[in-house]
Length: 260
Image 1 (cartoon, one colour):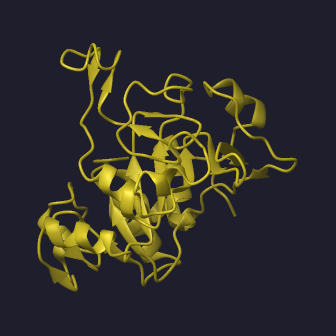
Image 2 (tube, one colour):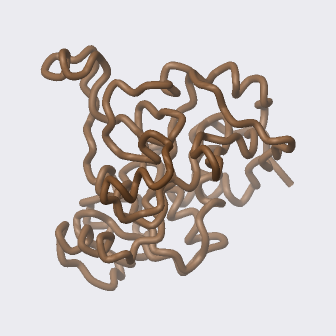
């Protein structure tokens, strides 16, 4: 039975967690992806293999919430710990199923900006807003088999044209665009926001609405998106969080509300 007493951050974590499959290798970005992976390990996917860019592969995230991808808690029971070069080499050899990333802006083809807000290249040195940058997200978007993107859903973040392309999705949406750019992975699999869950159209590679989150409608999602979405005949209503999921997030995983 669902619980309607939850925050947008909790809902996005739960949606991300439910999207992850067991026995998959998941490259984790900092923040909410770590909580989503931990929640999946504690519920339906105990055999997920997390990868952290500082070098830990295959830890069990049960010794406290890592506050970054370099936190020593990412190394608990890890299969091995050999540094940043090794983890990215792992993705380039095709061994990472999912890259789990965030961003500030996204366009219809799943390209993500986490670098700057402003006119590029004129304002690059002194942008309107300087964002944290790629971290490992660009490499994950290029080389992981698929990517899952999580972000807050606001019209200003969902743009027809990005201020800056940090992490490539389907680039310009033309056939074989990723292959022509030399990218190894297949591209974005899901976009999970505080309003909805999206996939991508197989013909046009444009973002497609799959499900609305609790409290949202197709209309509310469309009205808060800065580009035209592909809307299928049937859009699912995503189930509300369970008591167990909320308990684990609040009382086991992120007890200090560091990310939530």
